[in-house]
Image 1: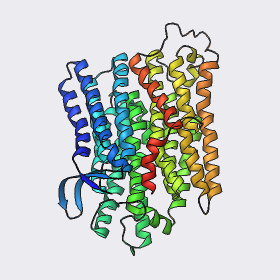
Image 2: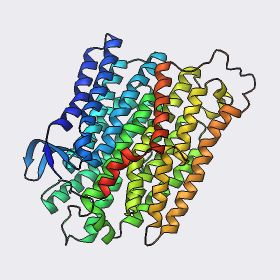
Image 3: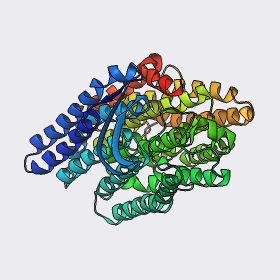
Image 4: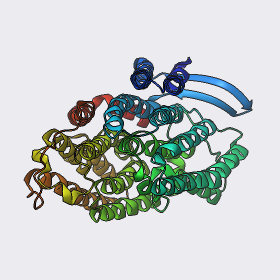
Length: 493
């Protein structure tokens, strides 16, 4: 492995930061303002894509901005683990930038300049997390994401919006300040450094540290990264559904929740390491802990008639697949968890894009109002159906790769394999139970009495094209998963 000293990881982040500044300065001209959003997204993706060949060759990009104390610096690195998140987030920002134009203009939303500015700043924070070389850098940008997404959740500036935003910021800042910060300080005291390990096996905790202390630190990180949506620190996520749909898509597919699970798994693998987790018996309890979230959130999703609420609880459930896979501590399990960062992102953003397109075209929010609507909006509901199959884990869509890897990973476990297999089977059945009826009712259900859907048509092309692209990519990466699996395999080697 060669370490390449390069500012490229920082430049990728600055694309979003400068994009946010230009957007805020162009508020009086909507076309120029939104052009800056798209340009920033394309530039970020281009810079990240330029690092792919070297990373695929096994090399690592590093760039230190400044050194605060011995072992404590603001440093960025782009390695195989980083690229799993960075490639997906930067590409989906391009789709989201186009989609939000149609959504925000279609609903004549207010404060669009603030919206686009905060959107860009959120991606600045998310890519900062992706390229963090140590716990300190990760924590700093994790907090930046929380702060920059608060105005997005509170966008409507009504009682419901402020209530959801208040819950959002209280959950995330309380857990970060109360759990992550003390844990980070204690690790620095124990090790003299906050740098991530070079591989997933060794970790950075010295041999001989009391096992109880290590376990407490581990729990602090698992719960402290509340953006991962693990119960009982998940309630901010459904509450944030008051935000505009592009924000929901950002929260649930790209920036916020992926920052949570990425941070959680980065610390699990590169701070504690698989060897220490195995020695302390942390894997199986973590797997069952998140399994409770997988099953319970799926059951709650079944009860929701509001489409975005159902998708929100689906997200709570699906995120825990990522942590579950890593907690299995088997090669296939870890691969299944990590590849789900990408698979879930494309499929879930499709689902939220579809929910937004339905609302713009019909002003309908509840599933019970959508019977027969698929015959009027076939492209939107076809994309919804494809993404639903991915969430269920049906071939040939992306989610099938996740489920397959997780099932194989569970069978590789020395103990408790039957329990994990039952969790995966039950969750798959629950996924089908709350997703399949939406598409079925849309295409084959009887229209509500007196409803003709007269005058209703597909949402603007600026919304339909991004959601169709995201749905098609979900199929492509299900049939040809090799590109993303290359990075995943490099992590587990």
